[in-house]
Amino acid sequence: MRVVADTGICQGHRLCQGDAPDVFGFDEENDVVVVLDERPDESRRADVATAVKYCPAFALSIDED
Image (cartoon, rainbow, N blue to C red; front, side, top):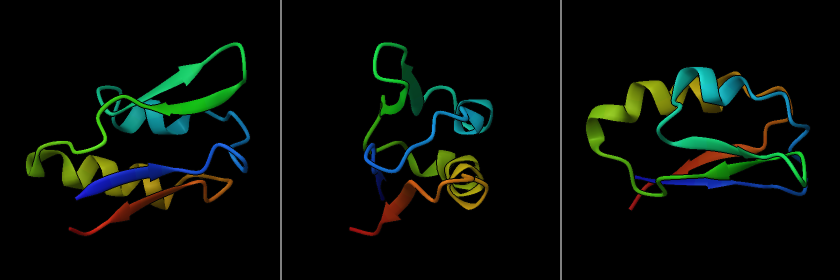
């Protein structure tokens, strides 16, 4: 699994940080999400999937390897 964030459509809601704070960070200067761990352990899949599902801007996705 590879986590992808489209910073061009990110609206800075930061909801993803609540679901997976070890995977998603935030760039205060540019007001966008930052992927901290592009290839998190499979044990993090449920939390990452929740963050992707509930992103209001649909800026997050999971690419399968």
